[in-house]
Length: 287
Image 1 (cartoon, one colour):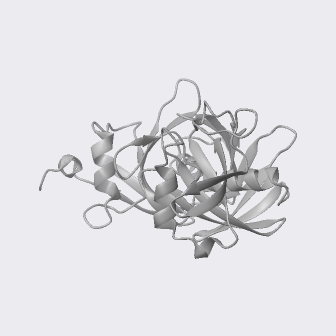
Image 2: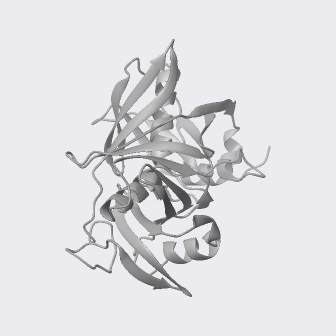
């Protein structure tokens, strides 16, 4: 299996282009490549496939082999990779995901992709579509004080194709993210679990965020998590529509278009290396 390792703000994935190869058991392959001791080491595996309804199709697999609906950093990285590998010469194109069709724009200078912008559409607040079982207004969960373990957190739930929860804090680095991230991820109010994002507000143009991703754990960056927190902060009147989100892995810019309701993320992605894995290893075999 031929692959490319990429990272966007230290959120790293193994990308596999399936136009000329087949991954017969993607769940097993994802578990192998994600292992940081026995495999390549990553936050998951991304398959880039043909699509009947968009320019490309992206499938996202977590380290445990489960398939996720969407990933913002993976979406932007996919956009860069298909251009770099010559699968498209367009700088504006679409990518099909389980969370819907997303729009990509590439900023190219002297043949190099220097920035990637992804329009991931409007956040969904309807509790039935997230899903979340608790609501506090108009069948939505916005700015709700929720008790988990020994803490009360102010939370906002939404979907960006997959379930997210923004958690407002005074100081994100005082939070035990493993303790509270896991507890919120697996809370019974989220029937399908949720991605959990703790954020605090520096000023109206800057916020900080740490991410606990569903079926993955803590990651150093999560672009859809950044979008979630900017949305929640906007609803609370705490920030503007153009915001820099500071993560452990770096800073990404989020624009919340109030007129259209769309969320747009802009940031970089880097190719780390290309490689090839003997297919026997992908299903637990030995060489």
